[in-house]
Image 1 (cartoon, helix red, strand yellow):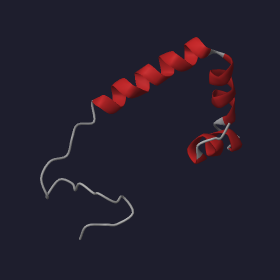
Image 2 (cartoon, rainbow, N blue to C red):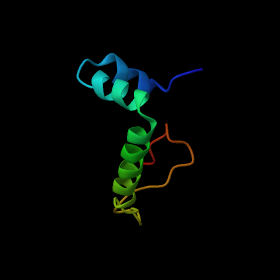
Image 3 (cartoon, one colour):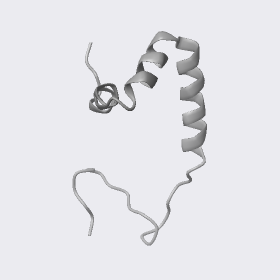
Length: 64
């Protein structure tokens, strides 16, 4: 099974490893934290129009 680079970075960092280990051991705690994070991301809002953001077909190319 592979890891996302961001997951591996969180595990390798001594500041975040305890949280990663706690969430890995407790599925219910993970699901609650995940749901809270998704709710938080849902409140960010969508940027619209050229002044406020851009839509990319290829995320590695900046549309200038």
